[in-house]
Length: 361
Image 1: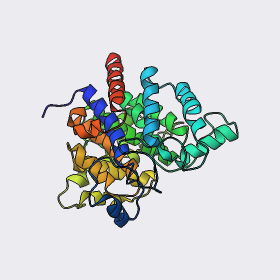
Image 2 (image 1 turned 135 degrees about the vertical axis):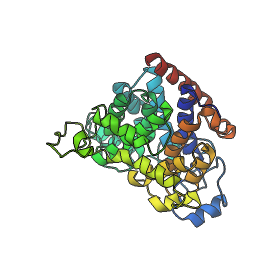
Image 3 (image 1 turned 60 degrees about the horizontal axis):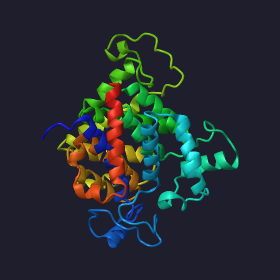
Image 4 (image 1 turned 90 degrees about the horizontal axis):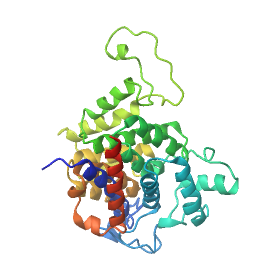
């Protein structure tokens, strides 16, 4: 199998996220797995309509949730501005999203608005606070779901990737642990878009960038890590995350996924191992595991993410981006692309994004 080109990896990662989101539109947020199987059968294999009375009711198979809608907004801004323009991004949220929501959960594009967006809407529209003062403490993956487009755009420049994903995250989520894990996920995705494997060496490559000062994670001195008697630890700088631990997760999980003595069988039960809820500490490890376990198999990655229930939309979206970056757009089954509403437009935007990246490299 040939190695996917940069454009194929960019398009694969973007479409992988959109596909994962849309696949979970119907069976979203079933914490009762028996109810999930009753409504959708033993195994969800494709796009489905949401059931009446459920989240996203009234939408149809292949459409995007609000997470996909926000990803598309971010992607359009990145392509039209030829990079991350925070003023333009915020303007689009003010003009395109906020007039469509009312601060309640079951409202707005995609049929559901996440906690962090509702909090930002209230502070921005009801209290008149400026951007930069509307972030809240929701611990979900909402920022990661949109900023993964930023991570793909800056995959060839990890320092810029970390800076832009970090500042975009802070617009709606200001908890430092959420931010660190979100930036770490973006950096992992960026490495895969570069063409690096998702393996036990990936965390070490990211730590090398920390030690060189390119990434904003605080770490002990290089001498201490090499076993030399420790000297004074470098002072933590403004904007640095407390530690690089969020960067270590991916390779630890990749090692576990490859270890024959460690089994999650069937793999969809990763949701039970790491947890079914929305928080970052449940979602990122599960996404890493599925992408590492099914190396090169996009379909198995996203379908096991969806069939695990709970917050399967975020799980499938995040895992789908990772798997799509690994296999490239040609490794994604055609039925997932043709069945996705708006896929042709997303492919065109992915092409333009890759062209901009190549022009800068």
